[in-house]
Length: 490
Image 1 (cartoon, helix red, strand yellow):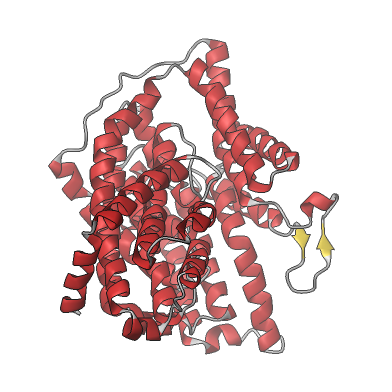
Image 2 (cartoon, rainbow, N blue to C red):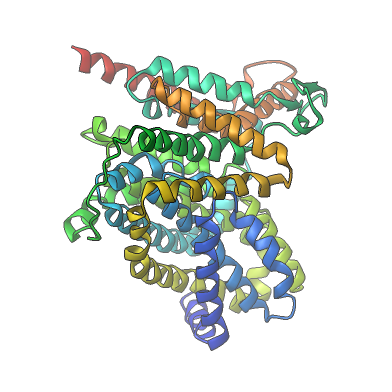
């Protein structure tokens, strides 16, 4: 293994591969920072340009883009409260409050360090334990996915703000949204008043509407009332003590992200939400989360970057993609005449370990570029809001249109923007709605498929050890939250 890794570093040191890493990182930053553009979409657009590249160079370019895009989503999440990627949504909870306090560089600094930390650590885990973990991931069936979704919904306690009831109402509304469209099991249409709703409510219009457009409307209200206060912006990065204070948050986020990344279809949004919730539960001062806590930035950013290496585990070990972007990467392998799977380690060890080495080098390059650009990105918040607000609105509407190339998505984004504005005015949290939209389809389809497999018996959820363990974890999580709430009241 060590000999192969040394060979891999020697291959990555070739000039064309170094350029590929740098180019992929820059493109990933741009893709991640633009709301509505995903890493998978960017890889698909770039794929035709890799036809005539050497195998390793093409894969290095695409994986560097994949990793950097996950960090890029935090730039707009921190500076203007607009998550560039669904996985960056929890980053807004504490990243944007830090910006409002005048410390965007601190949030961005922690974000890039957490991303690189998770990227390097999860790549080491990918190298060491990819094959056995991939086999475990294959044991996940409908009962396990249902249990994972239910565990994800227990995070409403962390995202609900001051009121559990309002958070619960928001989750129910999000779950209702996921019932719109074609029934995934029977194929019948549900609540489809127009042909545009046959595929359901897409995530991007919901995301940019609830977060970006509602924020635009809030800012417009402040500008109209003339009571907007401009904070003095500090360009100072976090101190060494502050970085070290987030070390455990980064570690927990990395472990969560890597494990969830291995599970095909779970995704970075699930990982980052769970990481944020678990970090809040582990904190000695959970009441401070949502006010600008560095740990609240470090945990989800570590999680969504660890997902990248996690998703490559089943892809490289078994030829099964762990995410949408990883599925498109299979196309890149196929174009180069390669077949991901166990034989790839035997037939092309230099390529596999060259790819591992490029992930390590790419994270270091991403860290250097991110720290260098932090001062520049922090200056975004110095732009007067009466100038920045229409720019943000234009970008978000473009993101909504790009999602499906139809005006219907734009109208959906505007609707959810107005809805988000009204919810925020009455102190209803919008994050649980996004959480429910992300998890809703997985919970419904997994539950119904499990019942089909068991002829309608609910015993299948306790007969499967992994599913039972996750459900018990979810139950204990809810009980602990109730206990801590009662204790706090006393």
